[in-house]
Image 1 (cartoon, one colour):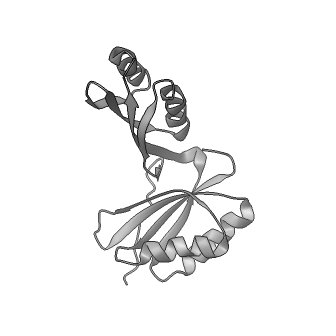
Image 2 (tube, helix red, strand yellow):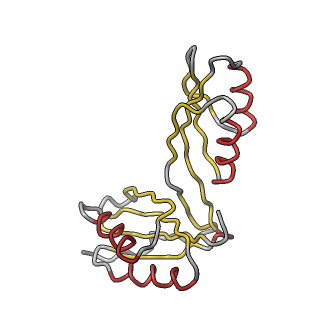
Image 3 (cartoon, one colour):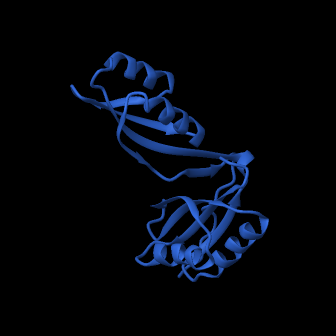
Length: 171
């Protein structure tokens, strides 16, 4: 994670239109979302968003204030980078024509990735880790030729016993 990025954990009502309202807030203010992940929580009435945003302290404070004002947002929390577990997920398909499949699978092993599909012309690799690890593998994979790549938004939870889920507010 870059130094000018910050992580938001957001609990929202789990129904249609919420993502549009949240992303619209960023759009109207001219703030860019670097990464976004949304999924239902352990309580199906709520979803959790993990949002990575680039900006200074002013932008950080404005984003938190504005998100907190949205009706469907139940809780917003800045997650400190030094005490947060942050991971991304990636699927990457590499061209193996003219390359040794062994070379590709060894590289996957070094990066603690997993080969999940392969055939005569390509290998698909699944990888989880910090952004820098995925970036490093992508740079290495360019030597083979990247056919296709899909990278999911970051997931983040605070280290230790604290939890973002806490007490929700009823709709």
